[in-house]
Image 1 (tube, rainbow over the protein chains, first blue to last red):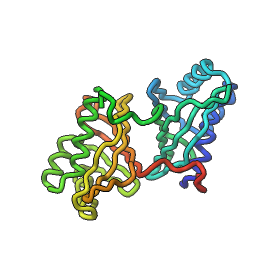
Image 2: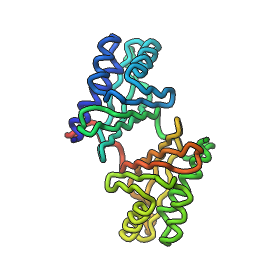
Image 3: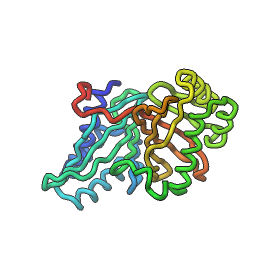
Length: 129
Length: 129
């Protein structure tokens, strides 16, 4: 398992978030996700490929033409990697960066678990922290 | 479970990384970690409280007087939180920020799992990503 291979896998995964055709989107997800993969971000916990595909359906219905692009290198250790990404909307404007942490399968070929955070880190001065 | 409570817990955990006395360090870790908690960063995977305590022993032996301070708010969802931190060395200089992702126990009272990354995100232009 090396960072370049994981970066290529992550980019295929980002393509799934950018694919307007639902059948192609599911094919991409089936290619990059382990069968029991889970996805969790601040808005959703999806415990199957179909649940994640349906979530992406809903997200893309809200912002047609949006694409997801990786915006950092991939930082990998112990089979887990972090990377930043953003949504580029149909008009070309980008939304704030998010951060994903992904767990690779033992053979490094697929994503076993995806954990996402939205936007920048919270400021230390935020009242609840 | 709320961000303020998690931030207070994380700050107690950071104190363990800053505590020069090994016995007090273990007491702090026992207070904030679940009995089966694990810790993983780019350099080590520790699968017990004692393994983590011994790792911190080694780190602090290399930089006596260093303290770990949280440098961002706590961003919490689905029982998982991210936050940034840095090491302040004995001479007052700070090392580059790292990022921790921590899983809370179901009752939110302790840390069940800690995953760390060092330094800033890798640049997209890095050759291997």
